[in-house]
Image (cartoon, rainbow, N blue to C red):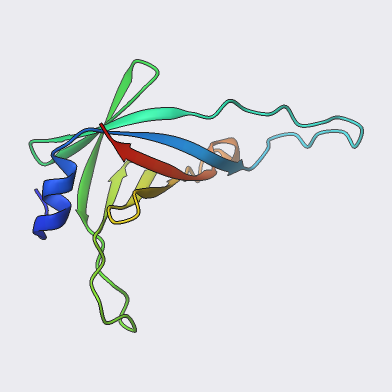
Length: 123
């Protein structure tokens, strides 16, 4: 599935991930006196098989194509991270620290622009 052995072997085991923070663009700004409602932390599972990453959340499965996240030109050491995408969803997973960053980018609807991060653990 992936070009580096550590990433491929770590993804053979399913993981569960918990979103720690999320920020998005609001369609309608809240009045000054209104308090934003806290959102419940989203939890989802990651399973890798057949060259795809499957994200399972709230009974729904989404499939992502993944590749190794290569280091920037000014970094000397390779990362043990993968980047995955699916239409308007982008997911970067650091397999050493088991952290993730997810972005939802839809140029047609600003209410569907969101950035979140969190941590994962192996099952």
